[in-house]
Image (cartoon, rainbow, N blue to C red; front, top):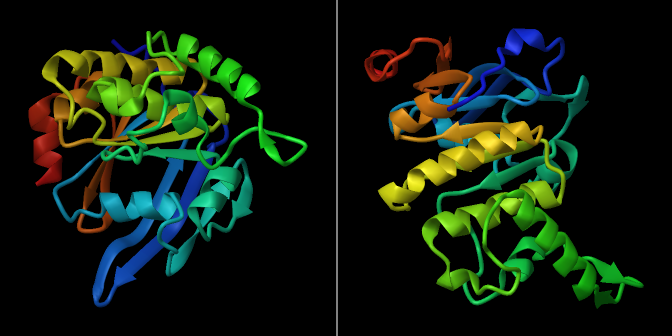
Length: 249
């Protein structure tokens, strides 16, 4: 399903983290994590509950601040203090399991919420936003209309809207947290195809999922978290379900 490109092809990581540490009280949820993330690859992130995956995502997304460690984006050290700086400095879009969409608003309103295009800095440029929304939805090969009410969409369609923001605002990295957890089995393949398409659009995807079969289906590399540390980084070549289980536990 995935046209894999090995990360050894790339000379410089898109994003690197060095010595990342985050403690809550006496518990080190992330404990000295080092990881290089390359352009246009899909990285699966797995681990048991409490392994440190969510805290690691929170650090990348600016929801937590590290106690120690550095972020290097395109060769330059960057300080992340909030979700806004994560989006603007690391070019990261986070797509959470709960999606954080406004169900009573239209697709176009959800795509631009908080980042509306303005005329003279005073009025929302609805015509330009509508046109950009149509372009992004067409690129994602969906039948969703900018006028559709998000609360009336299926789980898979809501995922598509959330992913659309990454294309709309030219994010480099899309973090997807359990994207297939709340959708029907019939729609899982559509979401996995969408993740693969993001790579073809030049994006890097971090996929966090308990569905190991999904991680195996689309990932170029798989990062195994264990007790706040990265236990192993695996190239997704001839790996099976049992291989991942063995590394996780």
